[in-house]
Length: 179
Image (tube, rainbow, N blue to C red; front, side, top):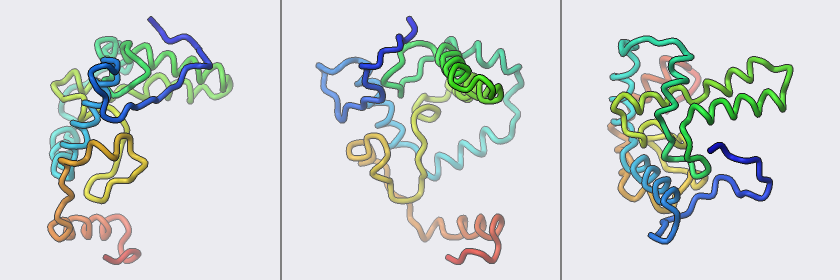
């Protein structure tokens, strides 16, 4: 069930616009990124902030969060088709082997995906998983599937956003940056 250490295996192989003869995983990954790149925009991010940053959705021990990941398989990962709990332990053990004196790094490897339990809280995977990218600006050509998945994500009206970003600039770096 767990991945073998195969030095001949190609990791992070993203197939642009997969067809029916490509693997189900390749199709699943592409569809997840297509939804992510279509629906994640400034308005969506603001709504997520409003919903989740109240920190009123419950509490749990970190071990319980890790165990919940046993019910979660990341749809954006082309290399893994096992529950994320295994991925966390694999990552932690790989880091422990590579960096035996850095115990803090072992812990980071173990917990790095705990936020994905949000998908077990009625959040769609496209809102939780995959690579991050900035919203509200031109999309980089370094983003996975950048050529095929952003067609339906409209760039925002910069004039409507100006006051919001000016307030952030003034809040965090007053007098240093001008618009």
